[in-house]
Length: 154
Image (tube, rainbow, N blue to C red; front, top):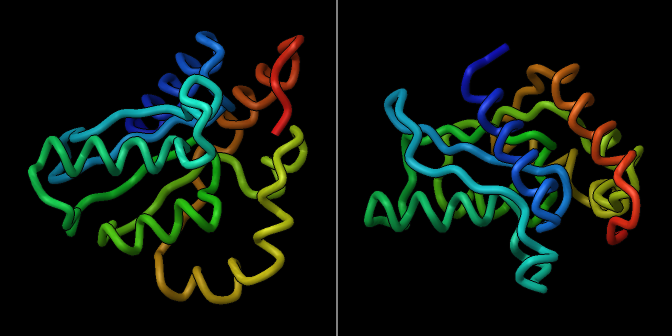
């Protein structure tokens, strides 16, 4: 398993164990070093924009003292939604690696696919290089999340 993806999945587990949001974790890497690590905090912050990728972009920008994340790569447990993929474009993220697909997200109750069907796949994939890696490990995390009782539905 890719070490950065492993850490993104571990970060997602922290978030779900603390009841802060869905099973989404994110690592941003520049020059082989982690510059940000975050997880979904939608529930914790009562803020629909607190997806793991957005949180990590905010943290990386602060840590690097720049809004321009050129040369950075992003590793996330779930394929970015259109909001997060757009934020990656605005931040100049070089490439995105994800473990679980939008279809996997839908299989555990998330509605990303509804938005994806509108515009995402056809246009976004031409703008932002994305690659699916370590899907089996991501699915283990998603199954763990699916079995949590009394979780808030999105």
